[in-house]
Image (cartoon, rainbow, N blue to C red; front, top):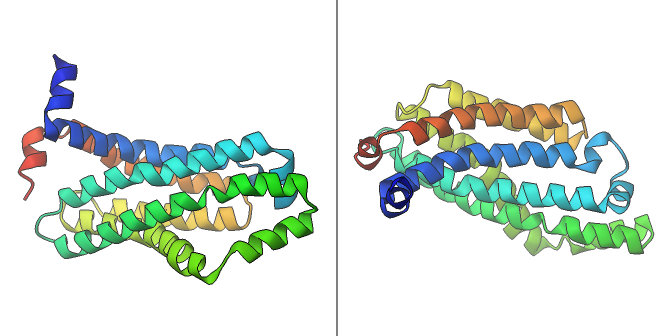
Length: 222
């Protein structure tokens, strides 16, 4: 009976899916960073060549992290109806497009594995650099990074502005993103994991609130 209602009631299904997604997305990001062999500070080329399984698992988890944020973002935007509605709509659209773009870039890690195994490191690195054509940078990388990182922050701002959560939510998203970006770029394992932990806490709290929300509040949000 409960299962039947879950799949047949659109409000219950979409609300729960959005809430669960907000929990699973940062969890996948955390797990993906935890198994990433480059986070140990090793040379990236050698890390990919010597740890193909870990690299593949990490890329897959990161891919699903960005994808799983999509239904969560759509759920957050759905609940913003008056204050912050313009920001929520614009930021939500940019974020969804950015997340999809960024998730697609994770496939390059699988090419890295083969290149660094079959070719000298310098040659493999040159091929990857040559593959970064202007169209890919302009249409894939930049929209993916800006939409994913800045977009998530702006969506959380709109959600708090609408009174759906305290300002701890956008503050936590901003801090989590900055800490994670700095840790990932510097190959600092502690910071690389600390950022996703913060994101898991703040997005997880909002996700739980959606799961526990009454269907009437979800469907009649004002």
